[in-house]
Image 1: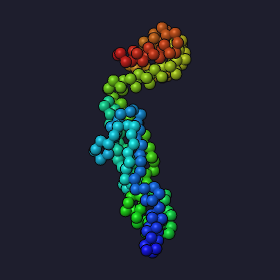
Image 2 (image 1 turned 90 degrees about the vertical axis):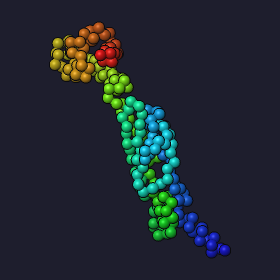
Image 3 (image 1 turned 90 degrees about the horizontal axis):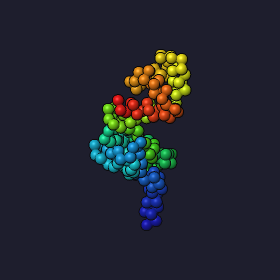
Image 4 (image 1 turned 60 degrees about the vertical axis):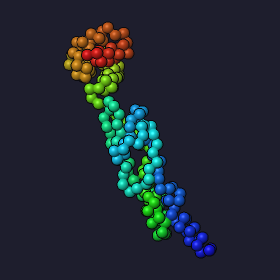
Length: 197
């Protein structure tokens, strides 16, 4: 009886990865927008932010995140040897085989996946993102554009860049500049004109 108990204890103690870290791993999936659908092997699993408990395996898990108005993004969760395996390998125990069969031989290199989705070009959401980027550019470079307008340099780098980004002529941009009292007024009007074009 003691021999059997000793053998069972030996199996549990040498299967370190299985015993201490388990054959499954909890993975948190987040994205820059809430409510993105998370697909694994074509099957919808959850919507971000969410947590999945996945069996450990040698192969990577491949996730695809989808949301209306946003481009689909596919990411891989790569596996690697479980650090706890070294205690089994060093003593060549049968625990290594136990870990291999349970999946605990493997571990994933991160517990959280953060996925960034981009808006589909031509959608209202993409237009809002573009308008915000233009507003930021106009605000940040207000003094440069003002200097270029003061000397009438219509080929100035900042005025010309804003013209190309907005589709408005440099003269139109300078006209908005003259009417604006502050950098905030100028940048907000640039964004408003861009959205309503």
